[in-house]
Amino acid sequence: MDPRNKVVIITGASAGIGAATAQLFAAAGARLVLAARSREPLERLAATLPGRPLVVPTDVADPAQCRALVSRTLEAHGRSDILINNAGVGLAGPVAELSPADLERALAVDLLGPLLLIQAALPGMRAQGSGQIINVSTVLAAQPLPYLGGYAAAKAALERLSEALRMELRGSGVAVSVVRPGTTRTGFGGNRLGSGSERRRVAPKGVPPEAVARAILHAARHEPRRAYVRPADRLALLAGALLPGLVERLLSQAITWERQPERANTPGERHHL
Figure: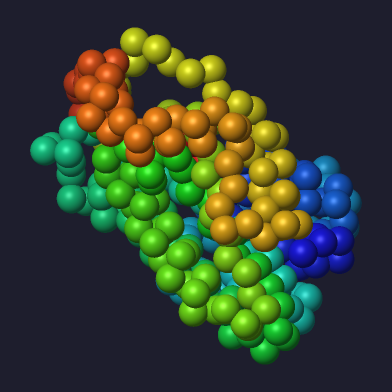
């Protein structure tokens, strides 16, 4: 789908990958609807973009706010063409010690939020006979890392929903794509849920958020089932599929857990690994 003159909803648009995606789609001529929990950063971003983007503060964990986001889009533009589910919150910690409340919050943002927005946007897309849903996932959905199992589980569930939805929508004119970033240089890790942090013997440099935004724009234009940001991410997953025992042993030795004092968490909406 050519984004020019298309109505594009982007969640988690206030910073990081979401903001970079908004800038790229605006340059491509899209009519943007920007969503995130806080209005002020959205307004600042919108002021720098052409086309007067619509700003709709939205907590994707709130079903009523998800429905309101799509309703405001339809009121303003009469249609929605591309839904980019980018908002996310990280979760770190040993699986044996994961807080159920933290996992519930991660599932609410990373899984149920996209589901609610899809359900709200799909009737209009089906009626117009065209549309696209792009769910931003992570390579961890296919190859989790130690101490990031809760986040990986939420994104893996999102991918399974995406795959089932793609089959259900076959012939409707509505496409479904998943984008799998690897490590991305954003503030996402600083806002994740959980107490403590993993210590890595080897820390990948990561890519800038603009690189992920380019992969999302590519997905919009070419509608692949799955899109990656770097060839290295695909190769890493291939290695995990071919040599799972070796890869798991290496990862278990390369990453350890460092506990920290309990602290209040502020869920973020910036996407990362």
